[in-house]
Amino acid sequence: MSMTEQVKTISTSEPPHAVPVFAASRSGRRRSWILGGVALLAGIGGFIWLRLPGPQAAHYVTVPASRGVVARSVTATGTVNPELTIIVGSYVSGVIQQLTCDYNTEVKAGQVCAKIDPRPYQATLDQYSGQLARDQAILNKDRADLLRYQTLAAQNSIARQQAEDQAYVVQQDEGTVKLDQALVDGAKLNLGYTNIVSPVDGTVVSRNVTQGQTVAASFQTPTLFLIATDLKKMEVDTNVSESDVGGLKEGDKSSFTVDAYPKRAFEGKVTQVRRSPQTVQNVVTYDVVVGVDNADLSLMPGMTASTQIVVEQRNDVLRVPNQALRYAPGGLAVTASAAGASTAETGKARIFVLREGKPVPVSVETGLDDESFTEIVKGDLAANDQVVISEEHGSAGGAASRPPSR
Image (tube, rainbow, N blue to C red; front, side, top):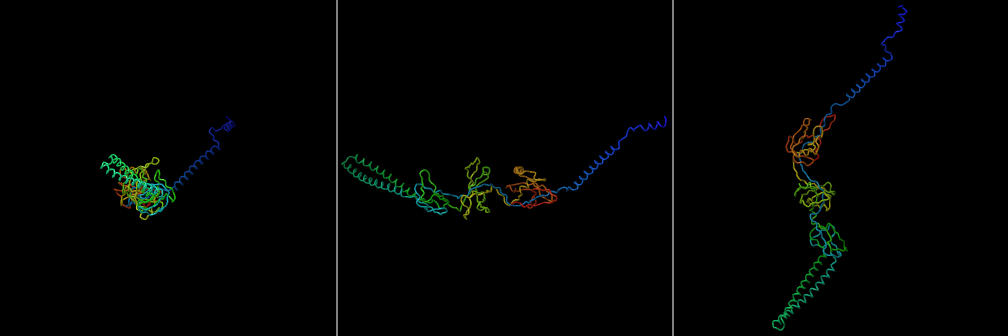
């Protein structure tokens, strides 16, 4: 082969694995973008990691264990009333002629508070008195005739039958006189009832009549006055639910407040637990009477009292707030109902005491619970020990103390 042919052959043939220049350039740029994105994400992640705070320390809220009173009580609403209220009415009908008693009048037993017009009853008394006098005169005449007939019959001057008939007439006259006497006595009673008198010493708390008013006592006795025997001794009639009445007994201490004196607590004692139920809309309550001294006359009948009756009380005992019995590390992990049920069943519980900055579990034996504090009967706990009731998480460690609520 000549030189010319060889050159031609070489120039016309192409390499079998040739790659275009623009394809290689585009692949390089893609790889550079990927590497750059990875580096950017790594930088952002590192920046965020450096900016995040370290582990947060627990911030414990504590309350010192204290010595004091633990009292379980029953709350109820009641009404202030006098110990004894006398209803003064009228036995007879008529027009109120005179009034001598009004609201807040101090009265004595037998004092006349009102007077009903006595003229109709005086007329009736006069009528029966005249009838009695007439029949008494007839009786006297018939008795004299009987004596004369008996004398004549003994002398056989008249028949014995005539004397016996006269004896029967005398007996009838005696019966008539007795009937007349009863009518006179009744008329005197009715005349006396026209004076409305107070049966006891006390204070008039209600007056339901006015002068000139007609009182009708035909079917039922109308109420004219309400007289409280002694306003210095009052009582509170409380409505206690059937679920709470079982723990109440006479002599239990009680305290209550009224709206008229919101900052004053009145002290009293349970004087009676009445067994008569009161049912309103299927809710059963019982009347528990609380007696109270009202020497300064500050309490008035009809006031509404918010009453607390102490069922059981322990004085000067070691106590902790109920929140301490529900606390567990990590927060309030135990619900109030579950903790209360467990403590009531076993009498044992676990609380956490802050010692050297850390909560240490302490097993205790519990006693009386008043829904705010629980008595500690046994356990490695002393007064002023910082009991943990909750925890918070923050950047600074330590403990915060809160005083007990009471």
